[in-house]
Image (cartoon, rainbow over all chains, first blue to last red; front, side, top):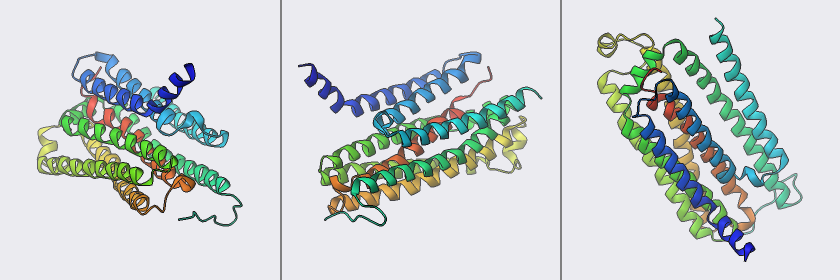
Length: 94
Length: 213
């Protein structure tokens, strides 16, 4: 019985993912019309990061990918954070 | 149709793995290309927050939101097509890939409408003209230039994605792609997902940050 439940969950994982993605896109759009002050940018970027991780985990199948593929993905993200991190540090300390 | 095993591979699984890893290496280079632009955009936005907020208020929010929904749906169709072709349902995968391709074309059409609005308004790169004299906010010209470069480069990628998805759809309908060579659809779908992820971050940057915190 538990195996069947697990199988049905897996069969609809893409549908659950797209429902979450569309809901969070609508949330981003809604939040942009509400005055959040200094929190506006972190909230929008946080939602974007969450959506990107759903796409990576479910649609790009990183959850079941080989170690080589995971290394490529992590290496790429590492370089992105390095670039953005040092750039932000440079601007902030001028 | 039997899939061809190219040199120097011995098995189809080995070839599929090489395609997968090669695609990820290519996608990493694509992400780093856009990361350079994001880095520039972040630096300029920190320097000129009012100019960037003013620019975002001039972007067409309804088109930005619609395009986000279209790309997310396209990603779903591509991911579902990959799972479907793995199960051997080539024709159904072809239908799903066609839907993803049409969604991509819808994005390009909406983006073209938005670009036409900007050109009509005078919101074009260069920082000259009536638009910039009536909106003298510092940094607005920088926002406009970066907006055109980043969204333009992304639109080129979306157009390429629409073609790739369309071609894969054709091959699925002809049953040249089936469960044994489903990695071809996987590679195309991966490209489409990265195009989607890039837009997921471009959208808030150019459309949603309409006020300075």
